[in-house]
Length: 571
Image (cartoon, rainbow, N blue to C red; front, side):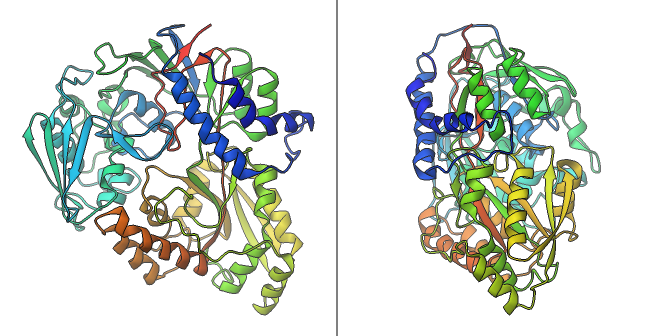
């Protein structure tokens, strides 16, 4: 069964209009205005139809499926990763206790079939799948789960305990054994081969959905012990395990990694579920978006992610398939309050009123993207219907600048180049439009462009030497703290403000034992954040995939959790 053409024609109806405007020939041409709510619902409907279609595809096709990546994985041990390309590979090799429901960010059974939590939020008991094997033949059982938790908790001092290496553990579990900061993790108890209990030192309502993160995938204790051990001060990302021996329970197992070129995976014959339909998966690195587009049209690859909006029409004309990932993200304009006069709320309000968000969506983002009015997507628990909004009003912006004594304001505007992110597919186009809008209210803009790595993120998140900037976030799992806590949970270089009321409120909300108790608290926090206005939430962009017409069985994930085991290359 092919991708459903009826739904695809509905989702991409606006793309046909874009094509007629000549967008394929000129990437700067603006698409027409669309109804973002109507198209966004089609993105979700398309995903659900593709999932249903994936249950009814041929059992096999061509032996090899080729999906291009924008960059190499950082390495192959997902616990030490925080980048999408490492996680893309990891999701084929590894599985977690918890998965996500198809076309959703909500938790679903993974290696655990079910789970229960205590009323105080301090213990979670998981029932495990029976008869599961790691790729090296090691049994997956409760002891293996405890071994993984103890491996994470007992990382040696040095790089392994730094935020840039163990980002997700530090962000969510806070500390390590013997460290200065108490860890949220307390202990693990294996009651039997198929029952395990994780005990926490404080409530963490997002614990179960967090277990769907690739960083917390189950890894073979045997392989970690043999190939992955490091001592204090050593770098865990350079072990033989991290470079050559990743060992999970997933539908694909590691074959080889030619760094800078490609990763090759082969189907795991003893996989617990439906076997991978393509016996070999190749993930070549093609950094240039135009090169990916041409490689797909020329038949050199079968698909790629993060299609530039300006490329959609050309791909459609070549009969390629466009699949939209339901948006679970935020694109925002950050404002660094260490740079005067961005510490003045009147100036921040003026900037917010100067931005026509709908124009940004219509002219620089893929069809189906939605205007944002707060820093979390609407499907997140705690999204508020009652936040302060700053409507597009250039005259109001000018009045606020005059009231602040900032009529002659000059701002450094930082933006990245030569990169496409799910929340920011065309940063240069987005920058140029917002710059024009700010200049129209009298703000002089000093453009500052940097390469994404290592310069841009290091400058924005590692220093205070920046002004306003474009950045965003794709949610990792369905928990409000994964947005608000990431952005505003503590003082940071990116935002440059110290607001104990917001910091404390987020910390307290995080420790409430259930999402139901968290909901009104997070609603209040969202309202407070938008009144304080540390930045301007712009949009929830819809990222797009492109595939050869012969591809069947694929469906997207809002949290980028795609497994390619169901994909068949039919021709």
